[in-house]
Image (cartoon, rainbow, N blue to C red; front, top):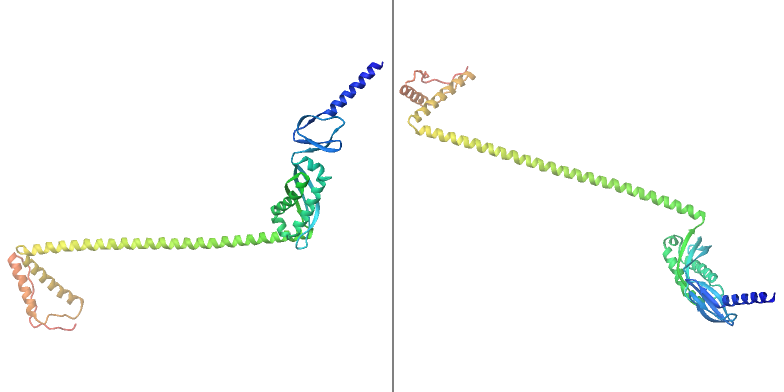
Length: 321
């Protein structure tokens, strides 16, 4: 009976010794070992042998990036406006020994320091700037925390503001301001549209006037060219007719035909004058008329004409009707 009991006791002792001796550290973890109450070593991931009952794992740290929710708090801006701010902090343990012995609670220390730094940064900004300068606020908090947390073996990576909540009265005023600004932009956009419309209409009218004037100018040029062509054609025709008449006159009997034609038109002109009015105008020198009629008779006789031309009485005077 005693042998099994002793064996069981020895087995338990062996298991305890193995558990105290063999340590398996997970990946991205670091364990701080103390030997007889003093810092001895930092165990890295993997299998490690320690002295049982002499060495003790005092602290276990996670080396991963850790998000830390910073509680919401009331901050006062430069223009004395209360602002409720909350954020989230990201940090990482870089020195397990300092993280173990540099502060009794480095997480609490980081949280408190981030809140005090946030109040200090917000206090230097006006309310409107706090919404615009989030990057500046985050960078300022990270710089201040990183400098202090280096003694705690902690690296502050970044800080992000989750929410900025002003009082309800400020929210209503900001909403009214935003509405007024949007209405202002709408009015400006409408006026710019009307302005552009007038510019487009004026440009269109100008372009239409230019096109119209160009059309009228081209039409005038075409008309002038047509008239010039017509004048040249008529002139060419007249010149050709004159050349033919001149050629006919230069031919045999041409001059006699001209004299006969002139005499006929001369007599017809006096006859028409007597028909249209009750006043007859005759030349002062009747010899000219007699000479012309005589020339016409000579031409007629020469060509065998049978028409008789009545010669007016000599000494005819102008008589009223």
